[in-house]
Structures are given as structure tokens and as C-alpha cells.
Amino acid sequence: MAKSHAPIALITLVKLLVLFFVMTMMGGLDGQILGPKETHMVFYLQDWETGNATSVPVAGTNGTLSSVLNFGTIMVVDDAVTDGPDRQSKQVGRAQGIYVNSALDGSDLHLLFSVVFTNEKYNGSTLEIQGADRFFLKYREVSVVAGTGLFRYAQGHAVLETVYLDLPTLNAVIKFNVTVHHY
Image (cartoon, rainbow, N blue to C red; front, side, top):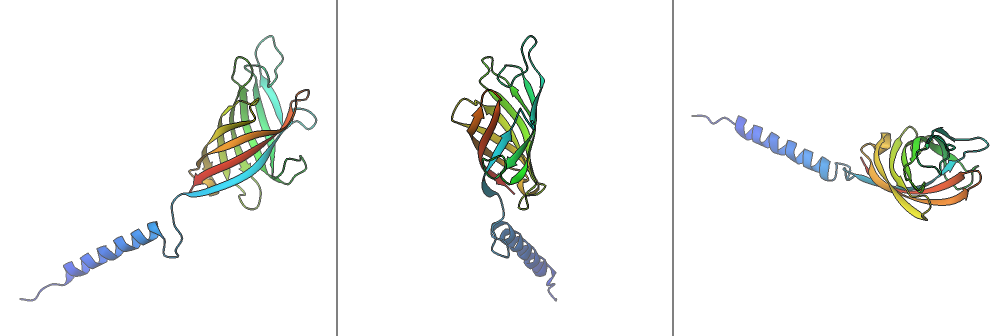
């Protein structure tokens, strides 16, 4: 009686497919490791409430002036994101969204905005920033909760540092030192 070689061929094919899948996920056929990548970047948020304003109050507590320093004030922002602290530095994107003064004593903002990149390297990609900004502290940390494009499925954090603050005008430049893991 003749033996069929079909089961052996099928087992060999399955083994080859599993091997191909493992090679692709663990190191790829070209040697590149797939999986989460880590990206570090530094940029500066140019937040201006006077002159060519990029942040404006849209709501505030009754009986008080709407000011970023007052509890309950909601600011809408479309701030330039630059590669240096100077307002004339090369723009790499825009920070678009809102922040709210969420502390009764006025010392804490809650940030909710997208960094929409326009530079050549990350053009069209975004990072979603969310968290408490205790802006009177030298350093504070907020979350990177999502991203799109090159930062799809991003998770991470940003350490914020105020490099310029003019209290009479409420103009500020904030340094973002960002670490994200993404695919």
C-alpha cells in the first residue's frame, strides 16, 4: 500500500508559516525589530494672550474677569510649536485644543490638546496631550495619551518647564521634553 505524502507536506508548510511569522515579529526579515518604538523630542509651545494672540478665554467664572489665572476659565488654544524657545524659531507644528484652570486657588491648569505636526519629519502626525499642569512649579509632567500617523497608539509623558512667563500679559513659552512609545 502506498503512503500519502500530503500530511508531511502540510505539516512542513505550517512549520514554515509559523517560522516566517516568528521571524517577522521578532526581528523581521530585514533585521529590524518590530513592536513599540521610543521617540524623544523637545519642542516649545508659544502661548500668547496679547499681540497676535494664540490663546483666548471663552468662558470664566461669573463676577470675575476671564483670566487663565482664575478658577473656571476655559482657554481655547492654537499655539505655535517651535524647535526653539524664541517666538521666531522654526515652527514644527500647532498645539490645538483647550486648557482649563481647574484649581480653586488658580494654580493648576488641565491641558487637553493635540500637537499637530507640520514639519517634514512628522508632517500630519499628532500627539494627544492631557494632564494637570501645576504651572507655578519649575517642572511638571503630563501624559501623552494617544497619537496618529507616525505616532499611532502613542503612550508616554512630557516634562514641562516654563522658559518664559510675563505675568502682566500672560504670554508664556513652555518647553516640552517628550518621550513616547508608539508603533
